[in-house]
Image (cartoon, rainbow, N blue to C red; front, side, top):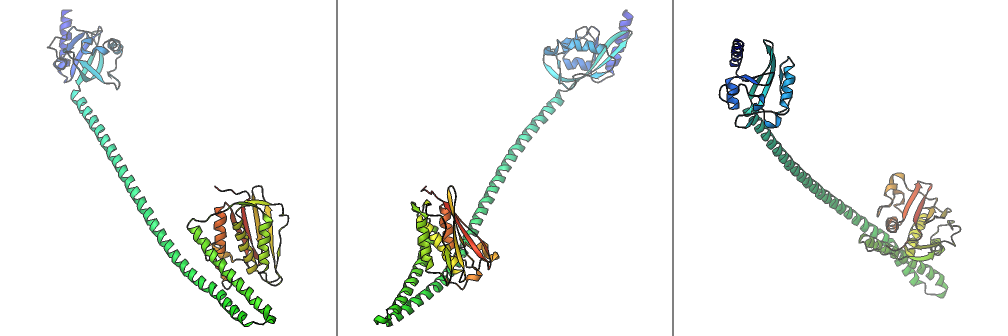
Length: 411
């Protein structure tokens, strides 16, 4: 037996000294039968001091309970394997300090006895380096995150600055556009005023001069004819001035509305009565049916203005011997009134401009008119939750429809 132990020791010594890693060999009882110098130094033991001790002295205490089972399993296998399977492994020094290790287990058999040889490597330096690298990576990621956030803030600030500049640029462009539009409107206005005022004023001057010549009683009819002409021309000019004042109030946001309860027939009768005096030869207006019982709560003046404008336009732009229909369509909470004429209509290419201020269609340029009536009607009705729409075909007539609430109240 002694010779066997000596042979065994010589074999283990030869094996261990031939390898640079720390080597610890245990028997089936998990007793250390040999260790090389590298292992002794690694675990802080003097040469030969580990012999006969249980393997648990090299295992951290928190793992020592499970380790014997694992070693027993390895003893029953023949294939070498790496310990830990991806987990961090630690060894325990004589002074109870722990350090990271890598260990490979190699079961083998000599003279019918089973042993396990553990090749142990101290990886403290590598672990420290890995930790440093991990810490540097963490710091780098934090710096990248900080730089990314700073870059995002800078991008957001730049985008906000670009947006503000774009808004400012758009406002400047809009201001320039409005200024050009205003200059164009001023030019149109001056041209319009010159034309629209000149003709009535000339008529007033001529009628006044002629009326002054008819001094005899027998000439009374002629004098009254010229006086009516003067009255009509003055009324026309007064309406133009009222339109201009209405536009100014709308633009300044100073338009005021008065809501009253009144019968629809009252307004329709008055508007059609006044319009009858403007009819051309053999023109006629068809009065709407069944409106005597319709009562509204609305701005009476705005309704009168709207109907007057639309019916007068129908008369103006329709030829002699034509009919203008006024159709009333009551709804549950609103009312629609259609003005249907057989006039010249509006050219299709110009229909999109019809509600623009001072716009005159090309087939109406020779007629008297300011081009602001429809714009005023549209502005007032929209302010009162109403609408004005139209359908028109050139040389076949137009249909204008106003729709408004029948029980409008002040908000």
